[in-house]
Length: 174
Image (cartoon, rainbow, N blue to C red; front, side, top):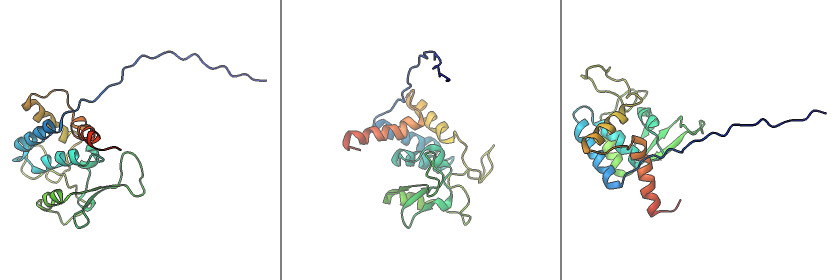
Protein backbone atom coordinates (compact mmCIF):
# COMPACT_ATOMS: atom_id res chain seq x y z
CA UNK A 1 0.00 0.00 0.00
CA UNK A 2 1.33 3.44 -0.97
CA UNK A 3 1.19 6.27 1.50
CA UNK A 4 1.17 9.89 0.64
CA UNK A 5 3.22 12.31 2.66
CA UNK A 6 2.35 15.91 2.54
CA UNK A 7 5.45 17.97 1.71
CA UNK A 8 6.58 20.61 4.19
CA UNK A 9 5.81 23.95 2.63
CA UNK A 10 7.82 27.01 3.57
CA UNK A 11 6.02 29.87 5.24
CA UNK A 12 6.00 32.90 3.00
CA UNK A 13 5.62 36.34 4.50
CA UNK A 14 3.78 38.95 2.50
CA UNK A 15 1.89 42.15 2.94
CA UNK A 16 -1.21 42.96 0.94
CA UNK A 17 -0.98 46.07 -1.16
CA UNK A 18 -3.73 48.66 -1.07
CA UNK A 19 -4.71 51.10 -3.76
CA UNK A 20 -4.92 54.67 -2.61
CA UNK A 21 -8.28 56.26 -3.30
CA UNK A 22 -9.45 59.86 -3.27
CA UNK A 23 -12.69 61.66 -2.52
CA UNK A 24 -15.06 62.39 -5.39
CA UNK A 25 -14.11 66.08 -5.12
CA UNK A 26 -10.40 65.31 -5.57
CA UNK A 27 -11.19 62.81 -8.31
CA UNK A 28 -13.13 65.53 -10.13
CA UNK A 29 -10.25 67.98 -9.69
CA UNK A 30 -7.89 65.45 -11.29
CA UNK A 31 -10.30 64.83 -14.17
CA UNK A 32 -10.67 68.60 -14.66
CA UNK A 33 -6.86 68.92 -14.74
CA UNK A 34 -6.64 66.10 -17.30
CA UNK A 35 -9.10 68.07 -19.43
CA UNK A 36 -7.10 71.27 -19.05
CA UNK A 37 -3.75 69.74 -20.01
CA UNK A 38 -4.90 67.29 -22.70
CA UNK A 39 -7.77 69.01 -24.49
CA UNK A 40 -5.56 70.62 -27.15
CA UNK A 41 -3.73 67.32 -27.71
CA UNK A 42 -6.85 65.14 -27.97
CA UNK A 43 -10.17 65.63 -26.15
CA UNK A 44 -10.72 61.86 -26.10
CA UNK A 45 -7.97 61.53 -23.46
CA UNK A 46 -10.19 63.42 -21.01
CA UNK A 47 -13.33 61.63 -22.21
CA UNK A 48 -11.80 58.19 -21.67
CA UNK A 49 -10.71 59.02 -18.13
CA UNK A 50 -14.05 60.64 -17.32
CA UNK A 51 -15.85 57.52 -18.56
CA UNK A 52 -13.56 55.27 -16.48
CA UNK A 53 -14.56 57.20 -13.35
CA UNK A 54 -18.25 56.99 -14.28
CA UNK A 55 -18.58 53.41 -15.57
CA UNK A 56 -16.54 51.48 -13.05
CA UNK A 57 -17.20 48.08 -14.57
CA UNK A 58 -14.94 49.03 -17.52
CA UNK A 59 -11.21 48.62 -16.98
CA UNK A 60 -8.69 51.00 -18.60
CA UNK A 61 -7.49 48.39 -21.10
CA UNK A 62 -11.06 47.59 -22.06
CA UNK A 63 -11.91 51.28 -22.48
CA UNK A 64 -9.03 52.03 -24.81
CA UNK A 65 -9.90 48.94 -26.86
CA UNK A 66 -13.48 50.04 -27.55
CA UNK A 67 -14.12 50.21 -31.28
CA UNK A 68 -16.59 52.48 -33.05
CA UNK A 69 -18.96 49.50 -33.49
CA UNK A 70 -18.96 48.86 -29.73
CA UNK A 71 -20.71 52.15 -28.98
CA UNK A 72 -24.46 52.15 -29.58
CA UNK A 73 -25.72 55.68 -29.00
CA UNK A 74 -29.30 54.91 -30.04
CA UNK A 75 -29.67 52.29 -27.30
CA UNK A 76 -27.18 54.06 -25.03
CA UNK A 77 -24.47 51.55 -24.23
CA UNK A 78 -20.84 50.59 -24.71
CA UNK A 79 -20.24 46.92 -25.41
CA UNK A 80 -17.02 45.30 -24.20
CA UNK A 81 -16.79 42.16 -26.37
CA UNK A 82 -13.79 40.59 -24.59
CA UNK A 83 -13.86 41.55 -20.90
CA UNK A 84 -11.02 40.56 -18.61
CA UNK A 85 -13.29 38.59 -16.31
CA UNK A 86 -14.45 36.23 -19.07
CA UNK A 87 -18.00 35.78 -20.40
CA UNK A 88 -16.54 35.80 -23.90
CA UNK A 89 -19.82 34.74 -25.52
CA UNK A 90 -21.66 37.99 -24.98
CA UNK A 91 -19.16 40.35 -23.35
CA UNK A 92 -20.38 43.01 -20.96
CA UNK A 93 -22.26 46.29 -21.30
CA UNK A 94 -22.03 49.70 -19.71
CA UNK A 95 -25.22 51.71 -20.06
CA UNK A 96 -24.54 55.38 -20.78
CA UNK A 97 -26.35 58.33 -19.25
CA UNK A 98 -27.79 61.07 -21.48
CA UNK A 99 -24.91 63.49 -20.81
CA UNK A 100 -22.28 60.97 -21.91
CA UNK A 101 -24.30 60.00 -24.98
CA UNK A 102 -24.28 63.69 -25.92
CA UNK A 103 -20.53 63.96 -25.31
CA UNK A 104 -19.76 60.94 -27.46
CA UNK A 105 -22.06 62.25 -30.21
CA UNK A 106 -20.01 65.47 -30.27
CA UNK A 107 -16.98 63.54 -31.60
CA UNK A 108 -16.90 62.75 -35.30
CA UNK A 109 -17.51 59.07 -35.97
CA UNK A 110 -15.66 57.09 -38.59
CA UNK A 111 -17.36 55.32 -41.46
CA UNK A 112 -15.11 52.37 -40.59
CA UNK A 113 -16.69 50.77 -37.53
CA UNK A 114 -13.58 48.61 -36.98
CA UNK A 115 -11.50 51.63 -35.93
CA UNK A 116 -10.76 52.12 -32.26
CA UNK A 117 -12.79 54.95 -30.74
CA UNK A 118 -9.83 56.01 -28.59
CA UNK A 119 -7.31 56.59 -31.36
CA UNK A 120 -4.71 59.26 -32.03
CA UNK A 121 -5.59 62.26 -34.12
CA UNK A 122 -3.37 63.36 -36.98
CA UNK A 123 -0.58 65.86 -36.66
CA UNK A 124 1.12 64.55 -33.52
CA UNK A 125 4.79 63.77 -33.59
CA UNK A 126 5.72 60.17 -32.85
CA UNK A 127 2.26 58.64 -33.26
CA UNK A 128 0.48 57.38 -36.32
CA UNK A 129 -2.90 58.95 -36.99
CA UNK A 130 -5.63 56.39 -36.36
CA UNK A 131 -3.50 54.16 -34.09
CA UNK A 132 -5.34 53.36 -30.89
CA UNK A 133 -4.09 54.67 -27.58
CA UNK A 134 -1.28 52.62 -26.04
CA UNK A 135 -1.67 50.57 -22.84
CA UNK A 136 -0.40 53.36 -20.59
CA UNK A 137 -1.80 56.39 -22.41
CA UNK A 138 -4.66 57.19 -20.00
CA UNK A 139 -2.33 56.51 -17.06
CA UNK A 140 0.30 58.90 -18.43
CA UNK A 141 -2.20 61.79 -18.51
CA UNK A 142 -3.72 60.84 -15.13
CA UNK A 143 -0.26 60.82 -13.54
CA UNK A 144 0.63 64.17 -15.13
CA UNK A 145 -2.57 65.74 -13.77
CA UNK A 146 -1.88 64.32 -10.30
CA UNK A 147 1.66 65.73 -10.38
CA UNK A 148 0.34 69.16 -11.40
CA UNK A 149 -2.06 69.09 -8.44
CA UNK A 150 0.51 67.75 -5.95
CA UNK A 151 -1.39 64.48 -5.47
CA UNK A 152 0.84 61.46 -4.86
CA UNK A 153 0.28 57.72 -4.90
CA UNK A 154 -3.09 57.58 -6.66
CA UNK A 155 -2.96 55.44 -9.78
CA UNK A 156 -5.52 55.57 -12.57
CA UNK A 157 -7.37 52.44 -11.46
CA UNK A 158 -7.53 53.47 -7.81
CA UNK A 159 -8.40 57.05 -8.66
CA UNK A 160 -11.22 56.17 -11.02
CA UNK A 161 -12.80 52.75 -10.34
CA UNK A 162 -11.94 52.27 -6.65
CA UNK A 163 -12.60 55.86 -5.62
CA UNK A 164 -16.01 55.86 -7.32
CA UNK A 165 -16.92 52.40 -5.98
CA UNK A 166 -15.96 53.43 -2.43
CA UNK A 167 -18.02 56.63 -2.66
CA UNK A 168 -21.00 54.69 -4.01
CA UNK A 169 -20.62 52.13 -1.23
CA UNK A 170 -21.13 54.89 1.32
CA UNK A 171 -24.50 55.70 -0.26
CA UNK A 172 -25.76 52.36 -1.54
CA UNK A 173 -25.62 48.74 -0.49
CA UNK A 174 -24.40 46.12 -3.00
